[in-house]
Length: 153
Ligand code: 8DG
Ligand code: MG
Ligand code: MG
Image (cartoon, rainbow, N blue to C red):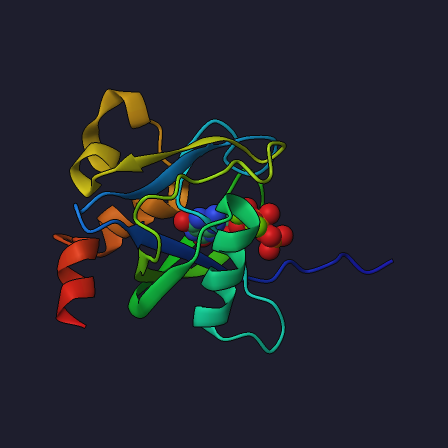
């Protein structure tokens, strides 16, 4: 029987900002990267735009709505141990209801959502380790700051 050849998949992550410059991150549970902090996001579905994908994933995972979406960057991540490869587009946007708190809509996939800064996510011991695509982002886009790119777009 022929061996199944793995192929790269498309992942989408969202920097969902409040006006105070914090965005959502949550610790993953039960799947690839369990125990690591990641952005809300998921797989791009067939025929879906990046905007529709992050809008859907944010609603499915937190119950929140986002506006003023913009493309930030694309990165490449190989999970050698898990034999998975993702090409990930990172989007940015602003939460519509500033007063709304994120809900843990998929408790089997996430321990909880927190509002964090980019500096915190990169270096606060409380938020380590981060999901590998975020490590790829730091390595592949030196100096990247999601809020700077979002404001410039
Ligand atoms: P879905 O079935 O709802 O589409 O996916 P999910 O259950 O939400 O899957 P996920 O693991 O959250 O996201 C799918 C993959 O996307 C993930 O395994 C790897 C890739 N991915 C990245 N970067 C990011 C990111 O920043 N956040 C999330 N959530 N996934 C990301 O490459
Ligand atoms: Mg999802
Ligand atoms: Mg997800």
